[in-house]
Length: 212
Image (tube, rainbow, N blue to C red; front, side, top):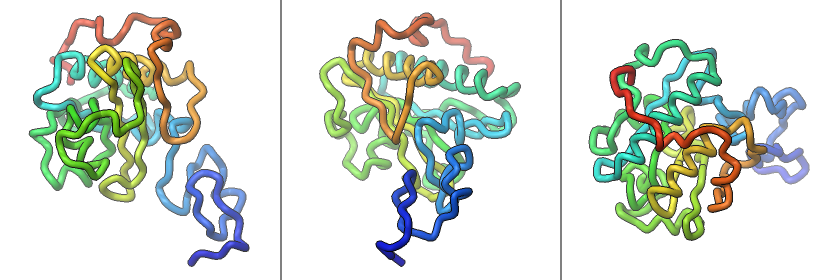
């Protein structure tokens, strides 16, 4: 019950009787499953296990598939994951997702509501809807985390851009998340961020689909 005399959790904003321990950033908010971008790679990789599925739009370009693969590989490497095969296929198309899939695992969605039907569903808008709804600028992109999009247990990440190049750029920023001071639940990526990527773009990599 709302009680303005109780301390507000600085992560989830819940006015509940929260001890200092439940506010500990490394634990996340224990009042509900609440995460911020600063928690990456959790909850998408936890205890060196990746249960996450990466979803690209059926009609999207090959760049979106490359973003899915590149982000998955980088998250796995930084999270100490040794195998991609323990929980079935890693990369899916939005047309392959069923209602039951939405409550099974965390998800990383490549493309906004204009490109990915599951992104539109998570945002509560019709598909397709312009990616402008995400607040991205021309030639810009976004990394957006949504807690409890479909079920409370599993958050989702949306990686989207104004076009294919900016989607790749947003993917590069996410893949190199350790190099950025992420706070909150969304990170806007401007065109100038291309100068901050130290490694080769994940969209420049050749796809090796045998391992995913």
